[in-house]
Length: 180
Image 1 (tube, rainbow, N blue to C red):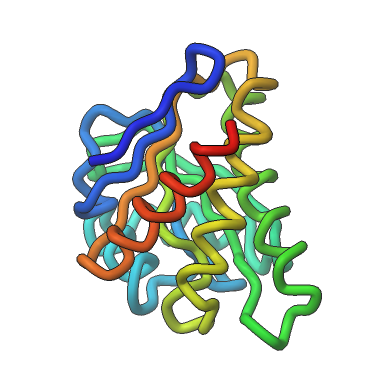
Image 2: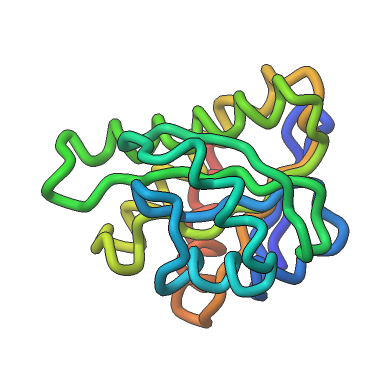
């Protein structure tokens, strides 16, 4: 685990399973536009939460790129799921702006709802093809810029499933930390 403090708030990078973040109030789903169960993070979150999650999601779908909606978490150990539609790399352009906006919208939504802790996966880096290093820089930089402005949000955790993603995020956070 790699952790830094920014104005008393915590940003963490951990290796793990996004569906098993018991100490986190809201987890983020790297959703598809229909907010439907699918592969990757969306499939894992829907499986763990149960069919009630998709029933609630139906009333919000479809969503647009960088848009976020919030639902209950059902059988997940969290209170909320924030569903975000990240950009498809090279299709939704400018991809960097859309990816940054996705994280920004999720953080702002969490803060507005009074949520104190949130866990993100590496949005858009799976089936949507976003290069991991570039995505890690955009997501961490966006979070570092926004977190100090939050009134309620105190902790942001990036939960990376595999060694490669975890190592890239730790390396990027270390690089960014040197300039803080």
